[in-house]
Length: 464
Image (cartoon, rainbow, N blue to C red; front, side, top):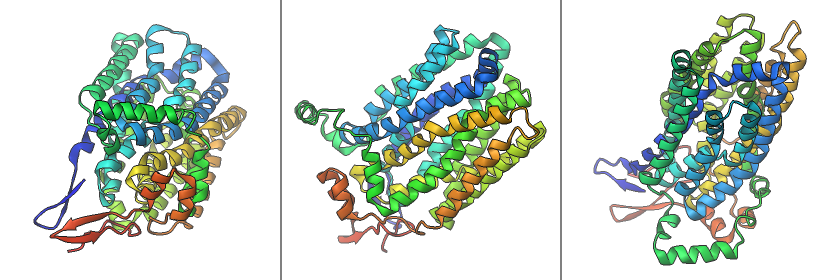
C-alpha cells in the first residue's frame, strides 16, 4: 500500500513490522536450546552424531521442499496469519519434546518431522511483500533477517547462562513459554496482510471460500512439483534457482554440522557454543539490518549477492583450515558479508512477480533451498565422519567453499536488474488468475496522472 507525500517521497504500510516479533519469539525459543543440544547429541550418539544429524536434516529438507510449495500457495488463498500460526507451532514442536522427555531419539524424530512446517521465512517475506513497495523490500527483508540475527545473538548466551545457573530443564521450559507467547501474538495482534484473505473475513465469504477449497480438493490440489514447473517455466527464476541451489549446498553443510564439529574437534562447551552462535547472530543482525539497507540501493541486488557469495566461500575456507579456536572466530568477518546473500535473492524474486503470487514465488525459491537441505547435511555429515581422524578434519568445509564459488560464477548469468518474467510461459504454469497477476504492471495515481512502476528497473522509481 503506497501513498505520495507532499515532498515527493513514497510512504508505505508500516504494518509489516508486526511480523517481526513472530520471527523473534520463534527463533529466540529455538536458539535458547541450540547451545545445549550439540553436547547432548555428542554424549548420546557418540561418533555417529554426524550421520544422525545428516539423516535428520535430510528428512527435514525433503519435507520442507514439499511444505514450502504448499504453504506458499495456501497463504496466497487463505492468508499469511493462519499459515504462520501453523508453521510456528510445527517448527517449535521439538522444543516441547525436550521439556517432557530426555530421550533424544524422540527429539531427533520431532526435529525431522518439523520440516513439514519449515516455511516461516517464505511466509514472512510474502507478508512483507503484501505491504511494502518493491524498492523498499530488500531493506524490509534485511530487517526481518536482522530480527532473526537478534534472536540468535541473545538466545544462545541466555541459554548457556540458564543452563549454568538453573539447569537444562529451565532452558527448555523457557523456550516452550516463548513459543506460546508467539502463538498468542499471532492470534491476538498480527494483522492479516493478504487482501484476498481480508476480503474473505465476512461469514458469507468464508462460506464461499470453504466451498472453493473443497472443490479444489485442498491440499491435494497443491502439487509440490509445481515448484519445479514454476522455476523451469521462467528463465529468470530458473537462473536464480540454480544459484540458490549451489549456495545452499554449502550453507547446509555449515549450518547442520558446525556446532557438532567444534564440539568434537575443538571441545567447545555449551557456554562456548553459546558465544559462537551469538557471534554469528550478531553478524546476521548487523549485516541484514544495516549493511543490506545501503548495499542493495548502492550496488544493486546482483553485485550485493556476489559479494555475499565470495564472503561465504572465504568463511568456509577459514573454517576448513582452522587448527585452533581463534581461527574459528576469525571467520566472523566473512560471515558478516555472507549474510547479504539471502535478502538479495529474496529481493530479486519479489520484484519479479505480482502481488497475488508472492507466496508461491518465495515458496518456490525456498523449496530449492529446502531441497539442498534434503541431501547436503547427509553428504557432508558422512564426509566429516570420514575425515574426522585425518590431518585435515575440516576438509569437507573446503568442498562447501567450492560450491559457493560455483554459485558465484553462475551469478554472472543473472541480469543486473530483475523483473524478467515471461507472461506467456507463466500462464501455463500458474492458475489462470495468478498468471494474470504476474503480468500486471503496477500503476498509481500521482497528482491526477497515471504513473507506471517499472518492473524491470533496478530500483523502484517515482516519476516527479
